[in-house]
Image (tube, rainbow, N blue to C red):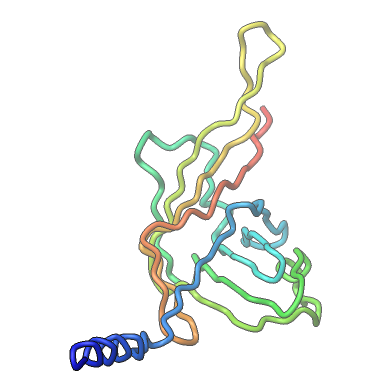
Length: 176
C-alpha cells in the first residue's frame, strides 16, 4: 500500500511541474504573394492582420542570374536592410504599408524587428517561347529570398530562425 501511495505521490509531483509558459511563435507567409511598393524600397507579404516587411534598396535586385550555389548575401543592418514582422488589430492592406501617411486603422499592436542575420538572394531568369521557332525570350527575373540566422527582437525576448524563406520577388526584364 505504501508503494501505491508513493507512486501516486510521485506521479502527482511530476504533473505539477510548470514548464514556464514556453510558447514558440511561428511566422508563416508561404501562401502569401510577394508585393512591392512603387514609391519606396519595401517588399512585403500580407496575411489578414499580419505583415512581413523587407526594406532593401531596389538596386540590390540586379537583373542578372547568380552563379549556381552562390547567392548574393547581404547583412541585416536595421538602417538600409531591415526586416520587420508586424501584427495589426484588423485586416492590413497595401495602403497600410506603402502610403507616406498610413491610414489610422488598423494600427500596429506588436512588432518584431530583425536585429541580425543575412539575406540571401538567388536570381534566375524567367523565360517564355519566342516568336522565332526554337527561341526563348527572357520575360523577367526571379529573386528567391531566404533569411539565414535571423534574430527577431520582440517584447518577451528573441526569436531565432536558422533558415527562413521569405519567397520569390519577380522583376521585369529590361526591354532592348
